[in-house]
Image 1: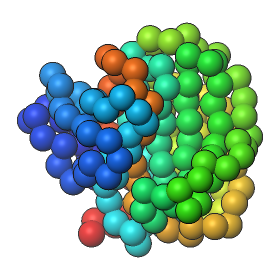
Image 2: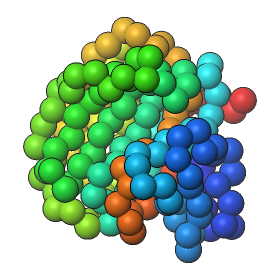
Image 3: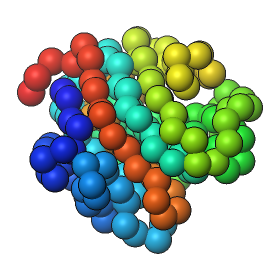
Image 4: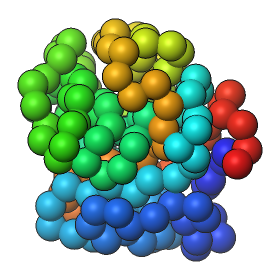
Length: 166
């Protein structure tokens, strides 16, 4: 799966939580709260997801998404200089896992990548491994982009490798 939003359409992405739109070839949340936009197939198991986080402040990915209440979230927050995982079950964010210092300032453009293989999830920022989570729940599921509403931050150049085309 590949989406660069250059045609003004977020092909295959939904507005499960919040409202999203394509702005100048980039994907943005327009709701004043956290927002998720999912894509892919519930049967996806092992894959990598990567994208450019433009003017990054507070966002991330959801992987192995069952629905908007059940997923594994990678949270990337230059605003707080941290990166960590959440396991979202039954709509609850629960605890933070494998939290680390991000080492980037708000407003930078970051390349974010997550590799999902078996029960191991690895997160990279600009090619550097930042955090690893091991968890056996949710063995398969969709992907999602996440933004906490802060104006002028976007996702672009989304790429999923290794997942079969539904």
